[in-house]
Image 1 (cartoon, rainbow, N blue to C red):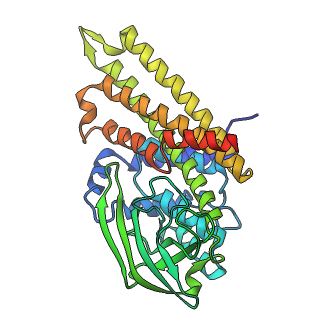
Image 2 (spheres, one colour):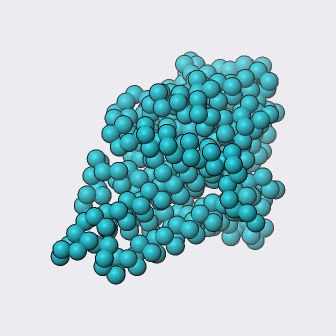
Image 3 (cartoon, one colour):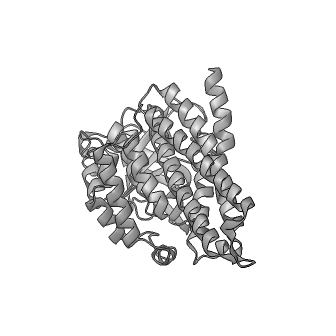
Length: 376
C-alpha cells in the first residue's frame, strides 16, 4: 500500500504549514485566550481562502475533499501549529450533520461554512452523559411546532455560532439509539441561554440551557427520531480529526524537545549528548510513528461499514491517548520548569495533546469500546 500523500494533499499540507508558520505564534494565541470569541476572525477568513475548510467537504457538498486522508492532512498541520480556531466543531461535527441530514435550504449554510462566513456548533453532550453518545435527556415535543427543553454541556464555539445543531429526544428511553432527532436552532432564539467560559487548551465553550424553546418543524434535520446514525458518523470523523491534531502536536513537542536538548548545556555539554536522554527521545519518536500508523489506519477505514469503522476508530483512539500522555509528560520533564510557562510554546502544545485524549472518549473508554465491538 502506498502511504505517500497525493499531489493535492501534499500541496495543501505544504501551503497550510507555511501559512501557519508565518501567521500563527504563541503571542497571537495567548492574546486570543482573553478575547470574547476565543479565536481570530482574520485567521479564520484566511484559512477559508486557502481552501482549508473546503478540503473537509466533498465536491457534492461544495468542497473538494472530505475523505479521511483530507481530514488527517488538515488537522495534523493545525495540530503542529497549536491552532485554537474551532474548525473541527463548525466544519467536521456540525458541518457533517448538516451535509448528511439537512434539507436543500439548510444545506445552503455549507457554502457559508466553506467561505468562512458561517459558524456552527453541535450541542449534544450533556452533563451526566460522560462519553455515552446515545445519552440524551433534552426533550423535543410537538409536531407542527417543536418545543425544546434541556441542557447541554461544553458546547465549543457556541457563543460565536450563527446556529446550533441540537440533539433532543422525541421518543424512547434515556440511552436508546432510536428516538433522537437533531434540530437547527438559530443564534438568539428565545429561551436559549448561554453561559460561556474559556477552555484550558484554548478556545471557548458554553453551558447551554433550552427553556421552552419553540421551533418550526422545518428546523428538524432529517426524519424524526433517526438522527443517531448521523451522530455516530460525525463523531467518527471528528475523532479522526482530533487524533490527527494530536499527532501534529506530538510532532511539535518532539521537535521542541530535541532542539532544547541540543541547545541547553549542563556540565559544559549539551543535554542531548547524554545517552539516557537520547534513549528517551528515541522512544518518543518510535511511539510517534506508531501513532501515525494508527491515524493512517483510522483514516483508511473512515468510509467502511459502521461497525468496522467504529472498531478501527476506537483502536486508534485508545492507542493515541496512551502515546499522547507519554509524549506530553516526557517533553515537559526533559525541558524542566520552562515547559510550564504560558509564554513558552510547549506549555500550550502539551495541553492540546492531553486534552485531545479526553475529547470524544478517552483511551480507557475506547479500549472498552474496542473490546465490546470485537466481541460483537
